[in-house]
Image (cartoon, rainbow, N blue to C red):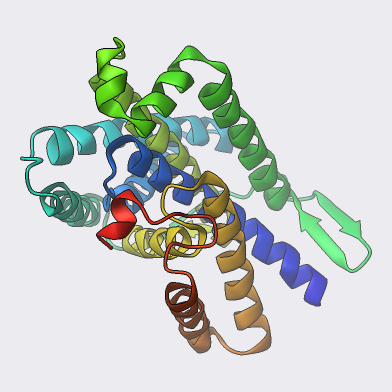
Length: 292
């Protein structure tokens, strides 16, 4: 049973990792946290599921819809909460994104109601047994898409001119602008990439739990914040490790203790990291962390 629950925890952590990576992309580009990212993930998943149900479309078409909607909502968030808000006040864009998230959650509830929406199963009859561990078709899809996204993000960030520009803006936007880098366009691109990751994470998380809800956004944001606290703000590797740790701890807590103690154990873990290593496992004391 332990190995099966460990695999389940890894699968949950994979979906968390995509949201954490999206958070860290925005932190790297603007040194600010986008508190509407959880709602971005929720909106993309809800729209995708509604379209799948209405048109009886395949899951992978819905995934494409989630990617497009996530990118569009993330760019809209940038324009409304970061571009148009006075940046002289550090907390203003952050609070604006938090308010926009609440507006999105309320709007989705008014449009489609507060009921959970069922995510259609994928590869129902596929099951791979490796000793005591059974991997379902849905888990294979989650792992496969996450792997493709990870490789794609690596190629974009490390092997393309746009990725070089993103890393340059992340390191020093003023110097990048002096060198001719279109900083605003790069920031918009970074937000769009974060929306792609968030949209995929929302639908894949729904595939894992079989449903999506208009109230998933805040919980996604909260989990992502705990992940980047554990892994380190702005650290890509830290986001992945932190997501896997949180996912495994949650699943093992439910399996061996109780669902009511799951959050308590995760909060205790985050508190211990804050006390013993405030910058996170892979982070440094710079930028946002100095203000957290």
